[in-house]
Length: 235
Image 1 (cartoon, rainbow, N blue to C red):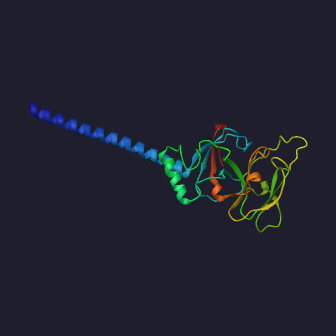
Image 2 (cartoon, rainbow, N blue to C red):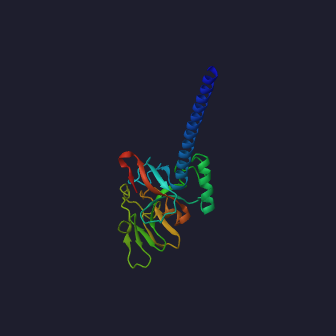
Image 3 (cartoon, rainbow, N blue to C red):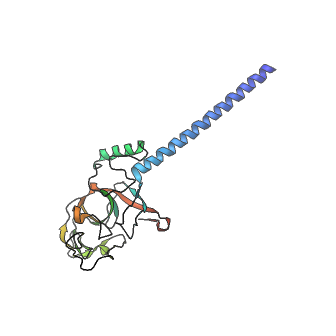
């Protein structure tokens, strides 16, 4: 009888251990799977950035937290992009390598600068001019003539997105020909070229200084603002 009891206990103990190991394996597997999925999303679909300046006010206030997507989506007039004039991530191979580096470093490193913080080199800017457009500025408002059209329209008439610009602090006797220019003569964009500009027209660097940017310079498109919560929205 004692031997039978011993065998039963051994069998029960073995079954319990097997069940325990199965549960541990399942828990670890689920954790790793969730980790991989989250990192794949952050690497290939969307990642967060923080706007640290007033350059996109009033629509995107300083310290706002925004999700941007590196997916190669069609660029539409009026959309806001994370722009990097000197981005090393400019080919398909480099994009894959960059995503792999970000994946294995928990989104802390990549070929580009750390995207958790926006620098003066990497910043949010609004796309106003598309390839083939002719654009000029008067009193800080952009006027656009699309390719094949005869007349110029304001940026607000043509944009698919509604937004506001900040020129309310314009000082008396401001010379729009110096500093951050409030006016410039027509510029025609070539294939693959875009004109980007800040919503705060008085104190931000953009295509007025850089010149036009290329598609590769548009690193990621803004898709949602999630903080402050009261201003949360989908772009």
